[in-house]
Length: 142
Image 1 (tube, rainbow, N blue to C red):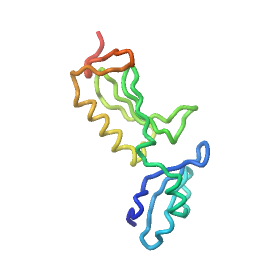
Image 2 (image 1 turned 90 degrees about the vertical axis):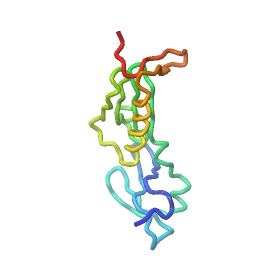
Image 3 (image 1 turned 90 degrees about the horizontal axis):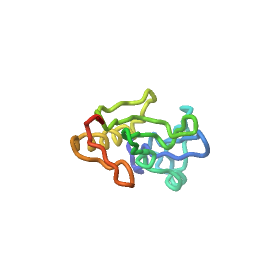
């Protein structure tokens, strides 16, 4: 199946914990897309309905800059009331750390690309607050 609608990987929710993701856009039924919910159940949904409520995978990715490093999380999934953490990039080592939670394929490439951009800046000052505080990337604090 091809992605004739450009919706593969797009997602939407219908309430807390009710994540739905487009997994197929068959050419022989252009009026429908195959959707999978968080429980792994698949069902057909009207293409126009999904286009109206679905969001691109990029909008799922939360990137938080904190004093110790960058946290990558999935806005569509929650753990104990917080976005589910996918990975962490500590400023001191720049050694990327995946969380034990599986990272959706639609987000993995986005996380890796962002982290690689930060890692390429090793040795540079990186602003970690709106007040102008910086850390030196790849250097442990003394």
